[in-house]
Image 1 (cartoon, rainbow, N blue to C red):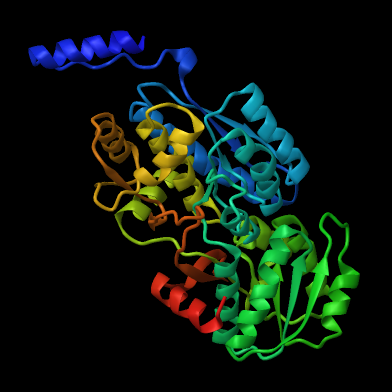
Image 2: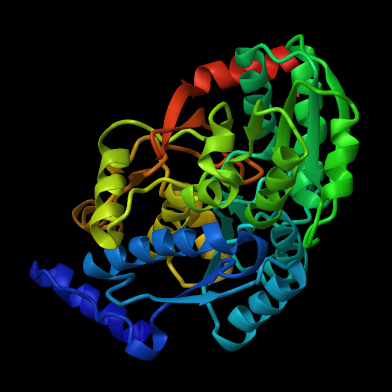
Length: 422
């Protein structure tokens, strides 16, 4: 087939004839794997995150697909457990033969998958939501093989946002409660350091184990420190229970929540009246045409506002990966890995969000031209470790809705990082 294509190209060039090479046969069409919690502690947010990934795949397919083929998006539920996520990754790679994996809501799942599947099997893996700095350390030590990327800033960025929220509110005696897993232990210590560097006091840190029917003893331990505020770093399911017990035991309404709780389902589960003074942090959604395009497309597709953790970053994880598949000379791991940075070329033609923009990008890549993908989160570039930086926001609940109280631009986040020394 390779010789045949070469001959066709030679004849076409000699005769000045425009010729389209055959698309991949249907059996050769690429598959994109998704490991995304649909049940368990992260299921409430994971279901909507999966929808954002489906939207990106749908846009690419309507734009012509990858190398002329319709992409199949194969999603596996990790049930919010790393061991299940690891089995899901093996199934996607060994049985489904996916070209790349996206999703990875939990840091523990991401660590297991990258260590045991992605790197050994040379499968590019692009996380939408895993923030643990341990993945950065793995990359620095050469343990990821360059096959791990993420479209969400790391835990250190979220820790800085927590500290900024505490400072803005003037809280002086903060207790940090955090889930005792890779995610929680990745965020909480940096949040403590940042809060104290910005002039606050952390009166204590209370770790709790996930999937417990009650956290009453942990909450009581935190309340015994007599804090004037709570920073809660947890997952949607356990955090809902923690908050209910916090308020039932007389805890202060001055709470700062992680982005995993930026969901009206969770707010309603706790009771909006208890959260009148609560604020939360999340990755800042970029303003401008690409963010607006995603917001409209998501609302049109699912008849719900695009509010919640991981939606914009999930769309970008899927879209940039599919563009990289188009750019790669072969649908093989090393080629796709290298193409993930190539489709972010600063000198390339800008390609945004939506069917027509992605169609433009796919065509440009087919013609051998350079592109720069600017996604739902705005412009971003993977650094040498596959990480990105980005703006943050502080949100609150107002009149039955989640609204943005404050945007923290990238420049301010960079200055904050330098001041704190993370």
